Image (cartoon, rainbow, N blue to C red; front, top):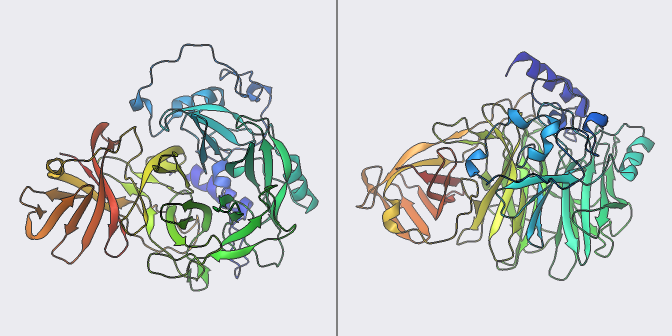
Length: 525
């Protein structure tokens, strides 16, 4: 990273102030790095007429107008890690899966919709929440914005509290309730913890959206409360709704909603804490934020996905589960998620396959299903070669035999769920163990992404692993069980997939070892 990038991040750190452990009156930036991308000093705000949403630039109509040009045949190899050639705002209709951070994805009708934070690589972007569409979760088309500027109710709250709202909306969450579409947004400010989550509604996922009210807020005061950003909502089989939200300060909160209105069931209620993480010498081990909660009706459990650490480097996803939406949620070791320790399993983290720069900042996920039992996880990924680029990753999500979610080591590329033959497993693999090293702090301390690098694994026809006759593998499709002479055991789910690093089809696996650590693999020959 060149000095101008470092200086820019340092300046943004002082401005944001949305990460401060409760017992440390320490102001630190959290997401303004999203708004200060590449090596350019940016001021994020509503652009002038040359790049307004009404569409006077080369990019066309920012409000979702029709492009009459003939679309070329889509080539999956046209998806690159970096995108300098289309980074300019005038090319926003070509952004597709680029410039995506904190996505929320749902399928409405036959179309997938992605709503995400206001970000752009090295440019000024307008505030309003970006919207993209896809028919297949692979090819994405930039569509429009939810708002034409900052929502007035959210902005007025921050101004009335003596702050100045950021010119960007963060971390939306979208859902449909009966015939109504609901969009929750996060609006914050440079004043520490002065933030608000608001609600807008529409009769179509394309809008127009109308502000309905403010759901929950936080202030720069002495109250014990988390930061009011990063909402997600779960609906129980009985129809009750709960919002989970928060970033730093005091962990993840749960707030009961009025399912009829989408607002807080009790006006002014902040909710209660439901998840926290560990401390080292009185300081948080890193950030905790970006909750996502789903209910799996087959397992009859609620799953709480949480993002740990600094968003540009060590960002990773943990998961806990519960029988009740109000918790307690338990981690892999049976520890309550609301205790002050780091929880696992960690099912997604910065990684690096051989011959590639790797991916970091891999968290703040959205988890969803296709209505036919196939689950997916989507999140941002930042290429190791330049971590200011932000790409949408969509991965298949599977379930272990004892009911824990695991995600594919590679992005989704239309692969089906056909059983992989045993003979197809014989050969050389690259495998990654998602290990973890605690580095307490935020951007200033967590400068390394802690990329988990691939090592070589061989499966031979005689059932040996790495040429060691005492290490054995067996296969009962789709589960590959590997028992090493060291005593380690890895039970992994096998699927066909795409080797994105080498642009070819392959076989992949994902699972947990006998200590609850995630393991990934892809066959290379």
